[in-house]
Each structure stands twice: as structure tokens, then as C-alpha cells.
Image (tube, rainbow, N blue to C red; front, top):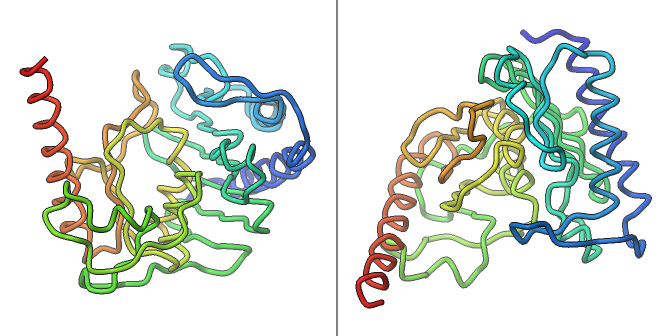
Length: 274
């Protein structure tokens, strides 16, 4: 079990950073676009600075990986590192929507051991520890346990349910899709969805906290190959993720693989034509 002090530290840091970010919510603070095209603003940088002080202050020997801090190789030599996203779902934040959250995770030897996800506009605080379960506002979480695809709930756009890149239409429904990838995964832990999958490249900070929250709620989450997620890698990204209730995970993984093969074939045809 993780250290109780680390659990308390992660919980408080995520909550307080969320409250700090609220000061800029709906405010006309400065925003700009990073080189890769994603938005960033004063709210992100203030939350990042706060988290760095709140987490590294009492744990100066831990490493650091954050979306809003330049990455360094120093973290690779640390057994324990903080993996944070100061504001996950920045586009919803800018639009004045509730689908953003502060994500904080403690990684030890490549495994997330403590996590918190604070979504202050929703009045939600998810907390999890390795082997200690997951909670939402101190209430224990358990995934739905859905065993067949019939009636499956996915946090995706409704028109994607029957997209041509799936082997067949999803026999279920689309539910709310927050901009925050972490909140989409947390919806499974809270029994508000049954499956989530993403084929794009995803940064470790986007899913570190949510992956532990979902796993401790009884869900299954892997990379596109069905392997357990490993963190604090030299290149801190995943090339596809599948998450679901345990009975559905194999089917979700197969559907993700099918879609990725369809996209790869399309790219190959365009390259040959082009």
C-alpha cells in the first residue's frame, strides 16, 4: 500500500490546484497555441507552478513530468515521479464548460500508485491508491460490470457509433464526452460509461491518474496491444488505449485494432496515390 502521507498530499494538491484554476474560469485571461497546436494559458501555467511547489516541496527527491513543464532526462533516474496535467481538457476550460480536470499521479517504478482527479466545476474529486480502491467524493467506486456489448455506453460522439472504421456499429449509446481524456476514463469508474478507446497518441499525463482510478474501481485498461500501461518512459506516450469493464475489454481491444488497421490502409492508399 502507498504511504498515507503521499495519498493525502496528492488529494490536497489536486483539489487546491482545481480551486486555483477556477479563478481564471470564465475570465478573459491570456491564451495561446503551442507548437503542436494545443491551447495553453495563464491558468495552466499557474496550476502547474502551484503543483510543482505543493508536490516537489515536500518530496524534493521525486521526479517531475508535466504537460506544461519542459521534460528532462533527470526523471528517468528517479524511482518515484509526479506525473501531472495541470488542466486536462483545456478546450472545455476555455469554452466555459465543465469537462476539464486537474490530474495528479504518483508513479513508482513505472506503476501508478496514487492518483487524484479534481473536476471543480462538477464538484468531483476522484482519489485512488494501488490496492486501496477508488472513490468519488469519498464514495467507493465500482465499474458497471456490463458483460456484453449490447447496451454499451461510450463517451464518444453519437455519429461515431456507426462509423465505417468499426467492424460493425456499436450496439449501445453515446454518453457525455468531456474534453478531458481523464474524465472520459473516470466515467467508466463511476459507472457512467462501460468502455472507452482512443487510437491517437496519448501523453502519460493525460491518463496516469485516471488509469489507476479505473483499475481500482475494477476496470481494465491497457495499451493497443493489450499490455499494461507503463509510465515514466523515455518517450512518455501511448499509441492507443483500450479501457472497459473486464468482460468487454477483449472486444473493445479487437475493435480498436480493427479501426487502426483501417486507418493504416487508408494512409497507405493515399501515399500510393500521391
